[in-house]
Image 1 (cartoon, rainbow, N blue to C red):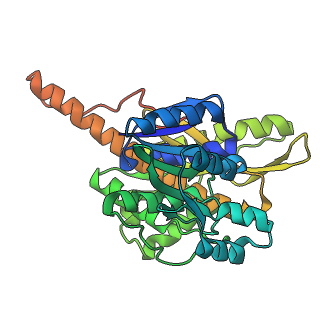
Image 2: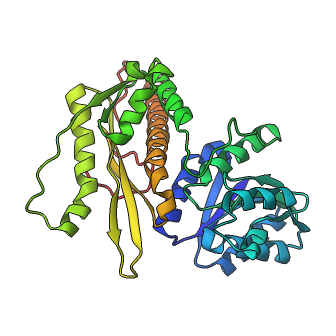
Image 3: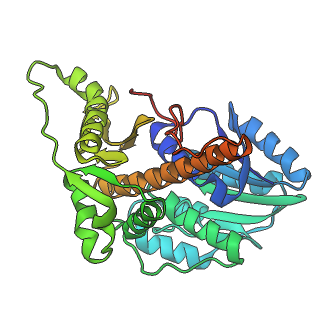
Length: 361
């Protein structure tokens, strides 16, 4: 059994990372997830589960990550050490952003644990023995969670952490694998998707030379923007997700595809504290659902990664949706067979929800 423990209320930025983890619940082997009001309660919940021999995954925001890691190591009497290799790596990658104390805190790891290194060496994940169970830490950081998840899944499947195919810098993010996975899933289930043309979806289109079957399962449809001359700034901002869902639906209907999807441009809004929030929306629709997911960051350094991560999220979400629809269809077919009813084409589920977002239609 693997339990996922986190707080009930996390920031929008952390929520994006948690969403990524939830998309991979089956692959990660997570059978139960629990939210707590605060980290003290989370610690007690983790102790109880670990004492029962459970594998516990603690997902925490970066603002509290190192402090919580230190608390767990101390409370659970886990032998720890400063990884000189990780310290050197993170200093090279992010030494100009953090103090020596902060870099050392990032490099603290369980002595007999396995590290899941992030691209910049900060807020790395890890797995180690604790009490009678296993403890895993993961950062709720949307720009780092993919690397940690990939390494963790590799470790769970093979007992080894797969080495990165290439070293990524802070300004790089390769979503080719996500697109390839999406194409394979769509092809296997004989479904097609319509993508609204835009900066981010055109990046997908340009992969057709690397993934020839892309054009067999995907259409790229231009949908014109509606006029917003009479809307004030706040109303326009609030309605962007609704408009994006509408575009995705129009693309699906106009092309005759099974699903539609779209990615918005990057928007920004200044908060009361003077901090600027940058965000984009990902919309996915089919004949049963219409959903939008907001990705956001307050770090200007992460701005250039926002749309590439949106592409990855779109691909993962659609792949998950198609798989879920296929499983639902198989169950319906099985039920029909048991009842000795004439074979019918499985109907599209009307209320299937695969990810947490506001229902827009």
